[in-house]
Amino acid sequence: MVALKRFARGLGSTLCTLPFALFGQCGAGAHKTIEVRIEPRSLIGVSHDTTDWRRVATPNDRERLRGWRQAWIAALAKASASVNAGTLTADPLLFDPDRALPGATPPPGAYHCRVYKLGANGTAMHNITIYPEVDCHVTRDGAVSSLYKVSGPQRPVGLLFPDSSSRAVFLGTMVIGDETRPLNYGQDVNRDLAGYVERIGEQRWRLVLPRPRFESLLDVVEIVPAPR
Image 1 (cartoon, rainbow, N blue to C red):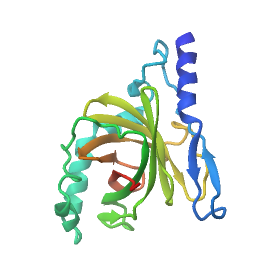
Image 2: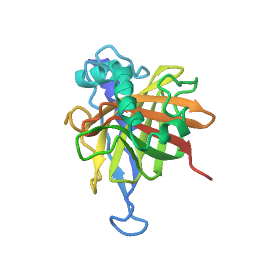
Image 3: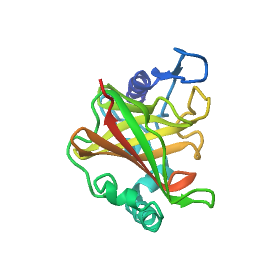
Image 4: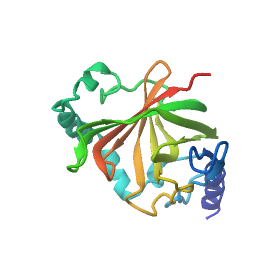
């Protein structure tokens, strides 16, 4: 029980103060604070310095992570048959399921993120949908990093857990519209997110979200440093 409380305090200090610029909602220069908490699950015996994503992820998200390759295959099959299939061939590194280089977690800083939704999940979506580039941030506290989109109608926010030298695990939730606070992870299965972060090139990463609840079979988020 002591170990559980110690972990919860450490996790809370990492997640409870993510700055969030609310563009176009409350006037120029307006800022809010996103409070993010991932509920520790079955963490008895885990020390403050250990962050095992398997003890945090919900059963549904563990299943999604296990099925990452099947999600890639299904999404690429639909996207390859799309009229916009040239998007895939124009950037083979971004859409190579097995591309993963050492240095999975981006260093702290400001980034630009672009979302590619592959494989329509429903009749209202295209098999390839590309969203405009938006600002993202990565922060770090100990062994855990946080990743969050600053703007856009759908804003993933969550933690990056170390998994291997070439892969980090993302667990988080989706903030939608003018919301300024995400739901706690595990509170709403339709908002929970689980995926992998991988480095695919020099100063270039991606967040892969298999089987998101809406719109697509696979989301690929390109992550590159913002110009200084």
